[in-house]
Length: 523
Ligand code: ADQ
Image (cartoon, rainbow, N blue to C red):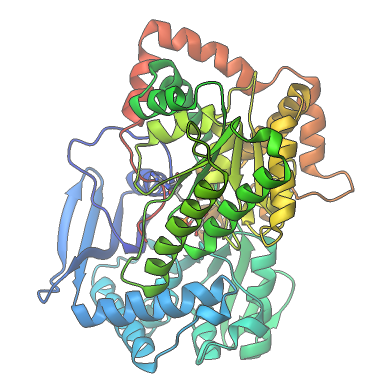
């Protein structure tokens, strides 16, 4: 079997790029290397040429095509990012629909199908990623492609009631029936998606598969993970080597504690609300003023979409106002840094922060939450404060789960996290670590590809390891109880790592891992 991956954007690795710390793009490359493969998508270039270009790297062919200016406007900025992105994140008020954008979206999917169909071999398995490409399988089927085709939806799938506000939503949802397997992040997303197929398109659901016309489609949750071990090593190495951004941050903080937020600058991430919550925390607990600072790292994305430019302005304005109201001559409570950092620097910053503040208003999964846990020092870990509306909250019930719309609740969670006794921090960390380790990125690619190939899936119907805050005993709670009793794996690894580092190769691997500067697919 050859694997064909399709995503909106394709980044061709540098010829001399070293093995890098895990992440989605890297995990997909590894899967492609293993099976031999083709990765197809937009080059990121906007121009008139639109010629398909192929580049060979090892076992993998990268085939990229350019978009015309009109295609970028309608398919990418328009329908994908001004209509689908907001509605899938439950933001009806921000959803802007234009028929011409929708036509452009269908047009690009049709063109991609035309260009890709010619490259498909009989034994290929095709894996399509994300909301830009929902109708791609239907277009491929129209061209006679009969291979197994899977889709993974990285962002939330809203309720049928919400989605119907989008014109042509039923037509779009119907195209999902062209897939053999549709993967989403959480069980809630899976339920919503099945409801959409049943309620909007008249599909039948037998508890496992959706039947629509002659086609049968499996819909399942595959919660995406990270390469926990690689990230853990990176964090430990970063602290040992005292990488520059880390040293500078520590020096500027002195004895003060650090609360960290790391996100693309996107309204779904709740950055402005988070800054307000930090301000509320300082107002409610004046004794904490001067003793703690918030570092928010938020590189701009999609600046061509007006809502993103507005968010950029608002985050500056709110941080400026709060700093002016609450700061002192020798203490700035909030620092907002709008640039991307290397994986090494990020990992070290996570490890130095006593609180990881991950409070999206909605998020498919949120890998930052998992990275924060992976980066912690097992002997003295920080505390994760996590939005209940991040897909990750379905697994990470031992985080402090908050409602990001409730500024006071988030403010109190920051206070609880900062005051939490070490024994409780360790107990929660161990439970969380066990879950993210059991459902890492390699688990995810393997489960998905096995399910797509029609092989039995290892995990119980891909019941994701871990469950949010339920009272009953859950796998997470059992895992937590087990880990609280035993010497933890991360702690043991920490010792192994110290040996590695002194011997040399461990350090070498870790710094090579630091070269990767992004984990997810470019959006
Ligand atoms: P994103 O919306 O991009 O992904 P997320 O899952 O948090 O969100 O991943 C962001 C990645 O970018 C993380 O790996 C993070 O470390 C990195 N990053 C963020 N800021 C950075 C900075 N300043 N410098 C360097 N790296 C930075 C979408 C969905 C999510 C889903 C993922 C994967 O919106 O819900 O979890 O896909 O499926």
